Image (cartoon, rainbow over all chains, first blue to last red; front, side, top):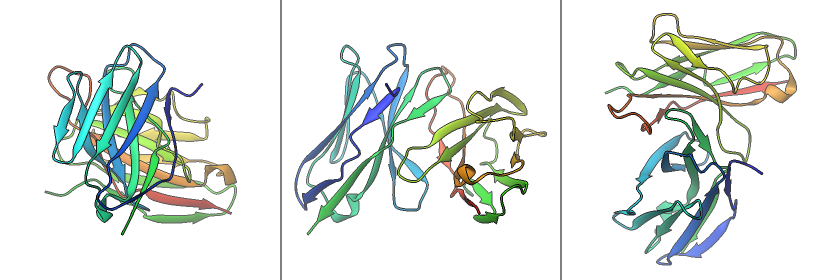
Length: 109
Length: 117
């Protein structure tokens, strides 16, 4: 079993839709969690950190469920510019991140 | 300010050739990471430096891979006797550790696309 698992998609949604991605992790001792965004042929960029209490940044909401060992990302009112690959990242030790393979999102008009 | 830069951006190598990939991290960033990203996959951790010290190299796939950061700034990833399976994007990232430790925002360079023929 991979340490961090994501559904690769693609998720194909119309503009304005709400879409949610989940990511599961296997190491219960994992300490910190992030969502990164990667555009085609570009480098990953931090989208948001994920806190135990859940956090929101505009149209984006991230949640952590330690008991079930998953994190989620919710995108409301999808824009064409949200089309990208969303990478789940889990730090199993204080500095070593493990990336999921990413979930592809395509937002169409 | 300037972000993380990597060079070359593209490299074509013949099988068996040695290559060297360079990373210039953000000035003042203590931590530096190297990743390998295959097509359709997420970045895979290769190695980690804190200043000039290589604290973790558990992700290096073989002894043909070697990384250094002699002065705690610029880093070089060297691959000896390249093989076709080494073809991938090599990403460098730097970060500044938080005081409490655990979880740092990583800033990635644009990557070096390596193709081994």
